[in-house]
Image (cartoon, rainbow, N blue to C red):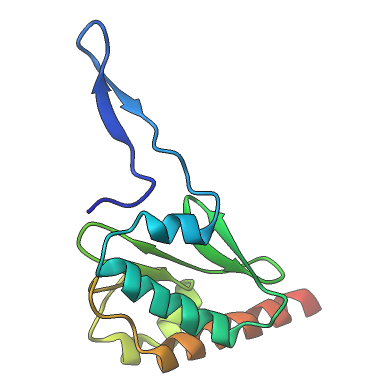
Length: 141
């Protein structure tokens, strides 16, 4: 499985290989419809956990070709890849929850988890609430 907005390759008349763009989805529902199971169900559960933690005014968008939630600016992103799913909550959130994320592959701004096993909803909600708190602090400065 490739990410839903991955580029494929085609041959040109001279035999060179040129990228053929895959359309970027316009909505989160479009993105998820293109993701094969079990990753689709996994991302739907992550999406539901995020949605339950954000204010009603938060919106879902496609940003950088993947689903995201915004509220007073970008909050979190999530996506499916060939061998994993990812949540992108930001470096400060990952650092804060590092102890609870030991079972997952993490990097500065990304948490990777299996395509068939979403992050625990309670953990996702705590991370989103931290991002919301950060947004509130940034606006007050």
